[in-house]
Image (cartoon, rainbow, N blue to C red; front, side):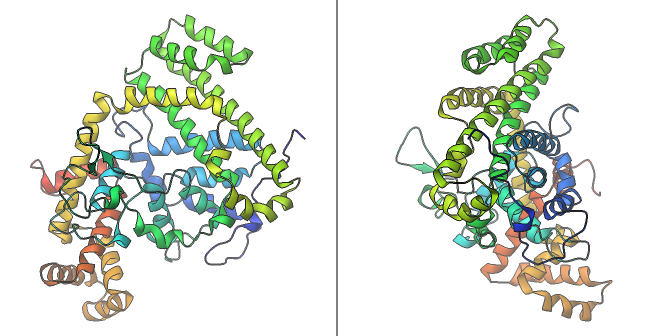
Length: 483
């Protein structure tokens, strides 16, 4: 037994939606999911969001959108060689980063600190209850796709299938980050710059409990898929790939360094073709082609090893659980979820972990910890913190859609209906803004603060880099007064 056929392939017929829908003649459920993601506003905004270097800084650097397209291509390559469902892979891959913030991971970390009360905002967030805490892009994707985006008929959420949602949420870890320990005092746990804040980082962990109700929607034992975990692996490969290319474009990575890294770590895993390509890379004189040569070689070895290792892992799994058909897998899917560590199962073999980690550390030090990236991160963090302060100081500066969403979340649809009767539809937003001002000045309820914080968090997290820059300039700049 050295093949898999389609034993582990997810079936569209097994996927469920929160709200049942009629099937379509020419598109299966995963194709419908993919199309809903493609046509969403959140997906379109990925073109203006940073991957590592700020979007728009250089036309050839990656954005979240180009990254998502590359993840899709890599995941489909792996999936097609393992007889997996390519429609599901595509839906997950294109939607996997839909919850990301402006300015890359620094935007995500800053919002998580604020929404854990670790970065004070006008005293609004110092007593956030556990069930209101946290921000993480893969969990925010679930909120976007189930609540913030709306269908063409105006209904809340896109009503995607459980398998697509599970894959998007689980392309990276869903557990909270631990706070770091200081180098001076190993017993002292720090969560952010202001470490005197009580309740920040309870037991040394930044909480994500706000998303618990969303996660309850998914029964992981039924909605997990090999396809979903494959996208997570492809995401890691894509990051390695484009970090190298972006590093070469920005001059942070030089030929001799990357050639030596490859020689020391990856040559034992080369086949004849890879060895030939490596020799070509060593002889390369035209550095304008360096990026293409390095990418061709490293992506080839990473993808090839992924296919070989995951196939071996799946064959071992099939033998362990006596799986020889898709029906066998369907019957034992819940048992496998309970017994197995899935990310380790769909991953590289231990012998490849060392070179892969070496590449990861190299890119972390060369790219993420570079002067260029760090100075951009500092500015991005400053912008997000000050935008948050501005909207908390005067919530009337929020756009109409956010005002309406906040009032609806805080007071309910009944209040909106009464407000329409009171102000009329044309004057609704103006009347609600006036109410918002009064509530802001007089409302003693803590719940008001927490709903407002989440509304602002949703608004800022959805911004593109340029939009965040422009809003910061509009609120704090001196060069223009109006937009």
